[in-house]
Image (tube, rainbow, N blue to C red; front, side, top):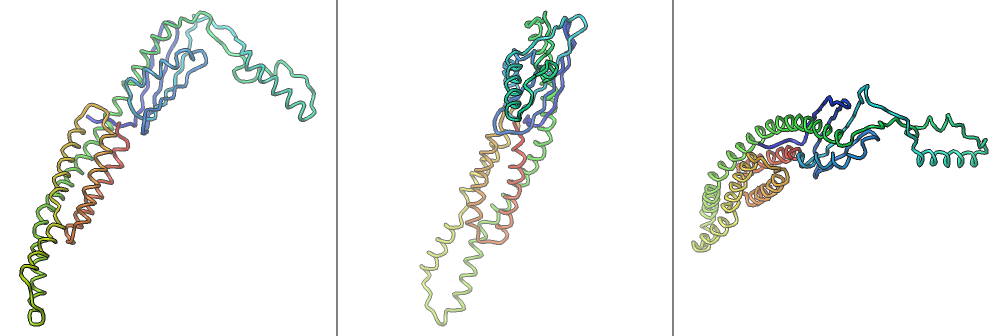
Length: 292
């Protein structure tokens, strides 16, 4: 079953230390791009969160939002970010010099700046926090996976219908192709018959021209390869692995065979079918951009 790269999931967990909430949003992307946003107090686990997400969601632009609300029993205390405070002081003094203002920097102004003073739990059990976040993340990913599978099922049904239509069009091309040479031969013979009074016709040369035309219009190899690619594509549709890139490659190959058939076509009906196949391939190409 293929999966879409579009999904949303939310996980919530009430631990003995705090209430945890994780939201995950995913959209299509060529590779795996995980962005995790956590409160400052949870920065120690940011790398682990990215690792856990990447182990289960193998492709897409993935945004993870983490919040944690301590219970009433948690003990918190204000903490000063000295490095950030020093940066603000330096900035304020520089602005004062540039604009010839008073150099006094009131404490109230400094502590009002974002993240200069934050609240931090003095008794945070990092091991417990890690366990609870991992459990919360698993719930969120489960929800994302469920949505991505539902989206993938809809994509699979649509693509399957288009594959069936292309197979039908290819069958019509395959049936029509031999008649193109026969019709061309009849037209050539008719022209020559009209000219027999004025031009001497060499039967051997006529047969040679027919053979050359038949070879130039022969699409047997392209039809065989196209059918083989369709079989491979259907196998990928039923795979449990990430197959988006493989599908993209197969679409390129199917387009290549279709273009060759079109260039060899000397028949209006064949050309119409080739154009119809190309239209379906383009629609499938757009769909698989969202497949994991």
